[in-house]
Length: 195
Length: 195
DNA sequence: GTCTATAACATGATAGAC
DNA sequence: GTCTATCATGTTATAGAC
Image (cartoon, rainbow over all chains, first blue to last red):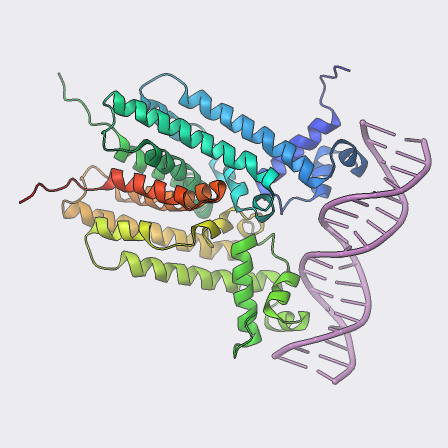
């Protein structure tokens, strides 16, 4: 049937996405998922083989979403610098951390090739996407030819991922923004003198 | 197991430090700690009031150690740029992640003011230490006066913390090093022409 | 100080009723 | 498809023997 309303399977996935973001995989129990989804044990084991299978569906969806958001900003208009700036400055729920990046610290996720794959692919994809934009900027003369696309991309993505860590440690999104401004001040192309 | 002339309390703390690093707080059970320390339940509850108390002792020790290591590098000789470079390039067990930074993603650690304090203090301390070095570099003319010490420090520390994320995601320490090289290439003072 | 026994509850999964 | 009952195991803590 073409049930457009929110079915149980859907609620289970969304509840799992929220809990994985808040508490990670090891910190999320099936019981907590079921309570949040308003479902019983039977529903979960009907639609999924168990916790890992449900988590995989949740992680894949989050990964796809994050990649789409990143592409929306990085693929937007403007100069290479402006697109990278837009990525760094895009609105984020900083204190919640990165729903994908945080999974890299989860021992059970990293121990499972299946659960880990979407995490690895997503972060690698964003890294390569940014690297390409930096190379574009070099060709256009906006960035110094001495810069390396892969290196700058890694620094950009690391600043974001590490910014979440600093923000959560200090209890304020300000630390994230401060790091971003620092990186942008280093990356900014020289202002062209008034013509 | 730490069995050579080390008392039980000590073995419990060290086992907890290892497990917090590997699995985080929510992923670490008292049972696992006791097995690794080769101790029984009674020993743990004799020396500590429970899991949170033991974790606090472990986190405090790790925090002190990390601060000492950072000071050893940042307070060493050389120009401001060289000291920051030394911090970024210092030997790390990259794939294990940061034993302090990872705790920022642990919901139970962040929910406890006591457990969270050493994490916040350590990262803030390193950030301010680097900020001071950047300001030194500005006074000496090694860094552009347009740079902001706090901003660069946040970018440096974020690159490290985020570097761990990228490395673990890709399964290789290379991503960490790539990001560090990228940041250093942006931060490097202009080469003085041969005299 | 250290041990084992026990307890109350949570976890992750299965079985079978409806 | 969804529910509740049940189960073996794990978690966190307490009690009391040694």
